[in-house]
Length: 51
Image (cartoon, rainbow, N blue to C red; front, side, top):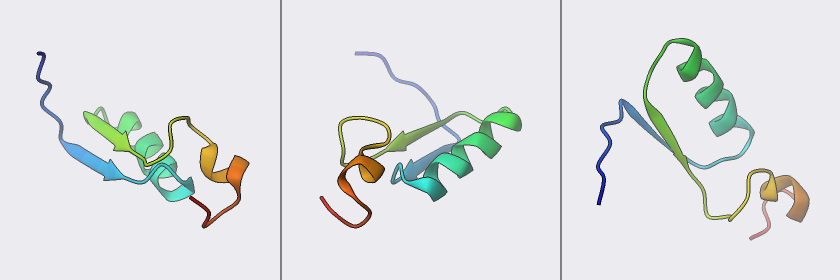
């Protein structure tokens, strides 16, 4: 098992979570984005607010 230290953990891979990840990357922060869906963009594929 490998452990990785993160500066930030983003819950939700929707528009706001992805935008936050973009800005964190530009500052060199270590982060992860967690989302209930299996693939990036599933929120849009399934329609906003649908799980």
